[in-house]
Structures are given as structure tokens and as C-alpha cells.
Amino acid sequence: MYGYILRRLVFGGLTVLGVSIVVFAVLRVLPGDPLVAIFGPEGFTKLSEAERARYMADLGLSDPLIVQYLHWMGDILRGDLGRSFFRAESVADMLSRRGPLTAEIALIAVVLSWIVGIPVAIVSALKPNSLGDNVSRFFSILFLAIPGFWFGMLIVLACLFWFGYRAPMGGASLWADPWANLQIVIGPAVVLGLGQAAYIARMARSSLLEVIREDYVRTARAKGLPGRLVISIHALPNALLPVVTLSGILMGFVLAGSIPVERAFATPGLGFAMYIAVYERDVFVMQNLVFLYSIVFVMLNILIDVTIAWLDPRIRYR
Amino acid sequence: MTAADPDTALPLDPAIAATRELAPPGPWRRFGRGLRNFVRRSPLSAFWGVVAAAIIIVAVAAPVLAPYEPLKSDFRHMTKPPAAPHYFGTDQIGRDTLSRVIYGSRASLTVAIGAVLFGTTLGALWGLASGYFGGRFDIVSQRLIEFLQSFPDLILAMAIAMALGAGFGTVIVAIAITRIPFGGRVIRAVVLSLKEMSYVEAARGLGASHLRMMARHILPQCIAPYLILATTHLGVAIIIEASLGFLGVGIPPPTPTWGNMLADSLNAGLVPPWWLVLFPGCAITVTVLAFSLLGDGIRDLVDPRLRGAVSVRGGKAAAL
Image (tube, rainbow over the protein chains, first blue to last red):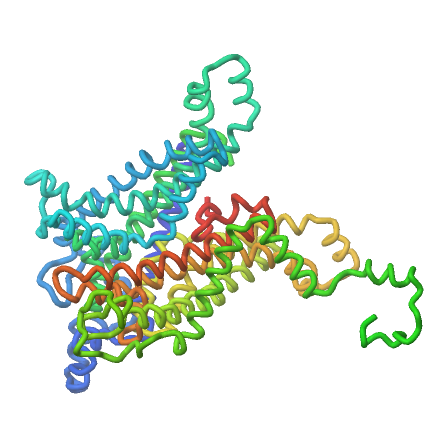
């Protein structure tokens, strides 16, 4: 087990290193002048050559790429995540202020996806092709097709129209004002959670259908165990293994999906910060946020892999 | 029999005529038979296939179907709710929403088809080579693909689209790159099982070159899974395209896309008019639904074994 964890960690470390190189390459090496991004195409043409060179030097963009990369890595390792071109706020401040909201959204979304997805899958799998099965499959396919951010916009509109209600605009921390915090977080969390629940329900249904046909489940039934116990003690634990893995993969999609969804709800979370960075072409903030998101995603997947290995000993020896 | 027959003048021996009946039908006949089979076996998927075809026709015939110019402002009708001349209402500078939704299908479909054509195909060919050659090349390829998957796809597409600057080509490239790993994984798995088939072994025994083996003997078997993959990924690509447009890194305005129309609606004031939100979103949902369900239907028909391998929206299950 420890060997397995170690292997995963080493591989994860390598992945993070690779991710940093790709992020750097995408945002710095690809064509597209950061000065154009900062000053806009008009402002850029007004700058003289000397001014351009000075700005580039100030921003550390005239060094060789390798040096720039090493500088960036050094900064990250020292915990300096850089700051925005346009705002006084550093990325670290942004993280501490906005990060918790997005983390709450992601957590609630995952919990919700399980609470909704698994029971639906059980109902579906126990009576395949029944009315309940068809209805739940229809809804899961529908929720896979609906873009989360649009669903979010509809919810915001519906609340405004019918109840004249709008979630509080400013940020509110969980500890200072839990009620306002919940109102801010619940919308995006429900949208992302339902979107994920659709995947979970599909996956759990097909996995449960497979497991139910196994011999040991038939044995359990044959020895006279009540149906409910057969499912909950014998079938579910094995059927849920692939669902746990899927949940880890989906975490990445919650993190990414929260960007447009937070924009739709105007939630002051990290996803919204990412949207602003993209909108303002704020290369440094973007670079650091993309890197952070990817690290979180890689780490979550290691955590999931280890959990799976702990739950299912067969995997450790592969 | 037909005019092409040289011996039409002579009465045909019934035995020979019978053998002609037994001859394998031409590709069009086979296609027609397959289509009939598809409609009979899964009418629901066939229905969604018709919807998908209709959406493609709408995109192609947009200039004919759209009642107004998508870019022309009518300042007498600004932010009007749906009513007689403008059935989907107008936006804040008086552009007809129905026309814009119709034209929006062009951007969405061009980007989605382009991205799938490049990304999924490149991935599929990569998977073909990696599965076929195996060994060190395969191991390195697998690690690279796993690595590509360590980015959430929207974030990767966003970063690339932002770095390259807005435009049709860049959005296609940005989405295509995120599609590569899925094509690679699924096709590799198919190739791995095909490689063990005895007919492939026989071809190898006859001394076929690697290129011939891949092109003549393995590739044709990969077409069905590729089609399923491509159809379902069209839906994913459309959602990513809309998200990029919504975040302002997609195809830039004034070109109408469903994503940038939704983004525009948020700029219309504190409360976006409902018709500007409802219609583009419905267009996205229906389109994605059509392509996903069509893909599902083709999969069930062609190869029920693939049920687990290629799931709706991006073969995420294949990543397990």
C-alpha cells in the first residue's frame, strides 16, 4: 500500500511539473503579445519602442524563456503567486478571499451529486426499463445536455421574476455570516451538483446492473437475504468503486464548470476571478490560477486513486 | 436486367438470375438497409438523428431561413419581448433574436465539427498507432495522453483560446486539443483487441507491411467506434464552444454564437430579458441532446459491447 501511494505521488509530482511547463508554454510562448493585452491594441501602437522594451523588462518578459520559467517556479515555491496587471490584489489574497467560496461550492456539489445520483441509479437498476428507469434516464441525459451556466441563468431569472429574490451580491464568509454565505453558494452548488448527478446516476446504474448479475449476488439472494440487504451490503459496495473514480474525474469538471456557472450567478468566487482574468487578458493571474486548478485536480485524483486502492486490494498489486 | 447488362437481349437462365439476387448488395443498398434497420430498432434515436440533420440544414440554409439580418439593428424595436414580427424578441440594440439563434448554429456547428474532425481524428490515429505498435511507443503515448487529461478540458481550452486570441481557427484548435486524449484512448482499446484476431495474424503471416496492416485490416474495424465517438463529442464540443463564448474567449462579437449571445444578455442591464436567455440556451440544449442521443443510438446498433466504453459526453467513463 505504501509503495503504491509513493508511486502515485511520484507520478503526480512529475505530472505537476509537466503541467507547469504546458501552462507556461501556452500562456507565454504562444503568439500574442502581453503588452497588447495590457494596453489594448490602440494603446500598444502608441508606445514607443523604448517604452515597450522597458515594460517588457519590468515585467521580466525580456529574459530568455528558461530564465522566465525558473523565476516563475521560484516564485511559486516561495509562495509568491504573483499579482494582477490591473488590480492591487495579489493572487494569494484572491485565493484566501475567494477560494473558500469555490471550495464550498465544489464540496456541496459533490455531496449533492451522490445524494441525488445514487438513489436514482438504484431505482433504475432494480427495475430496468420500468417507468421510473426511463424517467430517470431521460432526466440524466437532459442534464448532460444542458449547459450548467445557462441553467444557472435560468434559476437566477426565475427567482427574480417569481420571488423578486436575488442572492446577496457581496462576498460573505461561512463563519461571519453563514446565512448569506449559504444563499451565495447554494445556487452554483445545485447547478453543478445536478449536472454531476447525471453522470453519477448513469455510471452507477450500468455498474449496478453488471454487479447484480454476478454469482455472489445470486448466492446472497438464494440464502434468503432480504432484497434491501442484498443491494446495500453485497451489490452496492462493489458497484460504487467505478463511481468513486468517476467522482474524482468529475471534480475537475466541477472546478472548470464553476467558472461559467459563477459568472452566471455573479458569485464572488475563484471561478469568477478566473473569468475576470480571462476577460481582461490578465496573463499572470491566468497562468497561476490555471496552474493551481491543475494541481488541485491532480492531487484530488491521487487521493481518489489511493482511496480506491484502499477499498479494493486488487488494484494495489497491479 | 439492367441497361448495363450486355446480355439483356437474351432470356436469362433462372439459375443465373437467382445467383445475381444472391450477390452482395452495393454500398448504397447496404446503407439503405442499415438505415431502415436503425429506424426500426431504435425509432427514438432515429428521431434525434432527424433533429440533428434538421439543425445542420438550418445552419447551412441560415441566410434563407432567417427572417432578418442577424447584425442589423432596428432602433424602433429595442429589447422587445417576443411578438408578431420578431418571434423570439429583439436584443438591446434591436437585433432579431430568432435570426441570431439561426445564424448562431453556424458558428457552433463549424467549431464543433472542425474540433472533432481535427482533435478526435488525430487522437484516433494516435491511438491506432500506439495500440498497433505497442511497446515503448505505446507506454510513452499512454503517459502523454494521461497527462493531457490532467487538465480539466474547459480550463485548457480557455487558456489556449486566450493565448491565441479570439477567432474561429483558434477556438477550433483550443477545443480540438482537449478532444485528442478521448480519441486516443478509445481507439487504442479497440485496436488492442483487434490485434489478437486471427485474420490480422493471417495478414501478418502473408507478409503485409505495417502500413497495409493498419490501413487495410485494422482501420476499417475502427470506423464504427470512431463514428460513435465523433458524434457524442460533437455535443461536448458544442458545450465547450458555448462556454468559451460565454466567458468572452470564443468567437468574438458581432458574429452571433449561442455563447456570446448569452454573455451579451448579461450586459443588457441588471436583469437580463428572459427571451435573450431562454432561446440561445434552448438551441444549445436541443443540439447537444440530438447529437448525444444519435451517438448513443448508433452505438447500441453497431456494437452493444461498447456500451461501457464510449459514454455520452466525452467518453469520460473510458478514462476510468
